[in-house]
Amino acid sequence: MLMQSSMVNGQWSIELLPALPEAWKEGKVSGLCARGGYEVSFEWKGGYVRNCSIKSKTNSTVNLLYNGQQKTVKLKAGQTQNVKTW
Image (cartoon, rainbow, N blue to C red; front, side, top):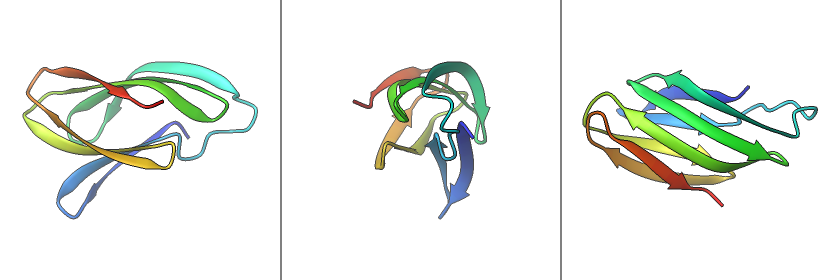
């Protein structure tokens, strides 16, 4: 509902809010674990991701999908990056 992670063409991909229930108009989550060693936190309102941060356990690149957009995020091990989503 809130997040899906998968390997696509040899690279990790994380999709935010792939199946959000209509009743959940707004909310936030923190510390969700995604495949590939990522920790994701974000909040949403009106079905759109408003703020997002992603942390990686390793040096890596991940494709982040949200609000109909895709962004490639490069991270160093232990780094947390805030992603501008709005």
